[in-house]
Length: 261
Image 1 (cartoon, rainbow, N blue to C red):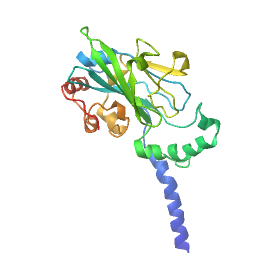
Image 2: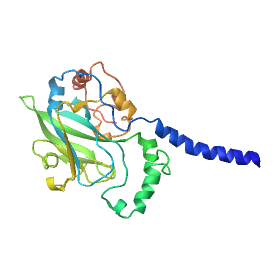
Image 3: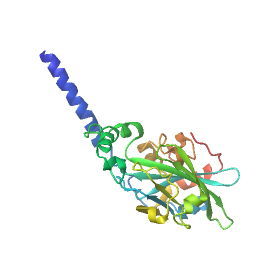
């Protein structure tokens, strides 16, 4: 009897300790800034990093949006430039201006299982996808003779994680000069459509110095080979390789066909 009680107590301690340890050793939920001055972009990379992009939402939701919008790119056979962007949020939780929160119990139930394991450790979201919340979207551009990019269309996730095609009118409806993707859901998916500028409750625009090539260590740390699918313009394994120069590597990839896994 004593042995059984000891084993039961040890098991209970382990159940509590493992998620807490995982939570405490998982690191920051947002990418850490890169130290040192990056190489000056040129060619396609320069055009991509000069094109401002905005990320917004029509609902209030939990999670801080990161300071950097990372990207990978490739060029198609017709010369179109496909850019996959990765937006990082510090967390994905059901609390905010939505029906889950208004009715309290559904949001609490989701938070108990999906976000946190009984409020003491990482939940299903962390186990299935990785830390933080990363939302991916893709924009396809044409390049003019002046070297500037012109928006053709985009792809992002809906609230149910299915992909939606965003037409040029969708991307430029908020700001005709800066493509804008936005969410209509607490879980941050960026495939929102039909909103006007007045509908957005938050909007952050990224410009030069804030749109950077995706480092392999960030891709590995946040397991981008298995999440943020709409942003994938190169094979998943390619995201985890560290090129000698990220900007040169993106130009090399321009010669390869676009592959999405």
